[in-house]
Length: 216
Image (tube, rainbow, N blue to C red):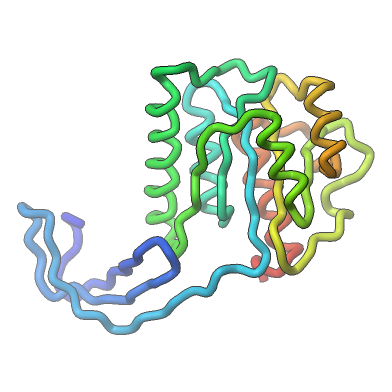
């Protein structure tokens, strides 16, 4: 905001689909204020194909990196998951702060990528909670580098919710794999290489969004 000057263009959004294209009329850098003239308004409809990524909690700042990349790609909802083999744990007293960092990262990444709809970052889910989301989805995909089915061959619906599950870098516990498969998740692999947990969700999300017509 402090770098903007009169005559420059700026976009304003409510994060829920409304975008206003504006021009700066006056700037008060010391106060962090701008006067703008609205040139046009547009409301982005709710996408028919909605993508939710269940992301296993990652250590260090890799979780925030994953959130940033997925937000830039266009994921609609991100659900942190306390998977069995997660190295990092959101213990009592730390969970609220960790979740706040994920939400702050999503908000700033949405602004940077000029999204009119900001992603929802939900509360940390258990494996049982993730299985419930999988069962309710129109399509659920479980990333597994050992799976025989490539993600590129899975038919993606044009409408409804797609849930994409990204496990921890240590891999999924067999009991988790069984529970998610029983709930209806389709195990699939991304490609010939194994990606980090911080980038796998964004790459897979881009493939899904291109298949359902949102990346056209």
